[in-house]
Length: 166
Image (cartoon, rainbow, N blue to C red; front, side, top):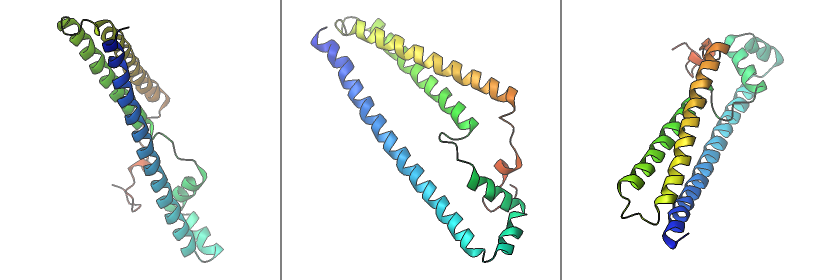
């Protein structure tokens, strides 16, 4: 492989790696901050309930039931069903565009990319395949989630942060 061919792979891979690490760090910081806020809120709420009777009365309400479910269930790491399906569809669209762009670039400018054309073709086909796979995964997940009833919104999802219905 020539010097130009290796640069075509190394430079984008370096930037993709840096971008992935930055995205991972930002997500971790956001998740940690969100969990700290939730824990502080729950602590303050439990502190305000002075006696076992107050806590029992609170637990009997709809808001208390939601609070208890929030304490006993672990939050989804990647978001809800809608968010995961949407993320797969977005990744699919991006990879399809990148793959098609690389393939079009290598086919319509063969003279300027003589050394890098085989590399661009391979990377383009891989990106296009990943995009089609993500798009197919999103469509299949949406279909299965609908069949399993995971896409129905319940009253907890529609409740506003203050506990009233939106």
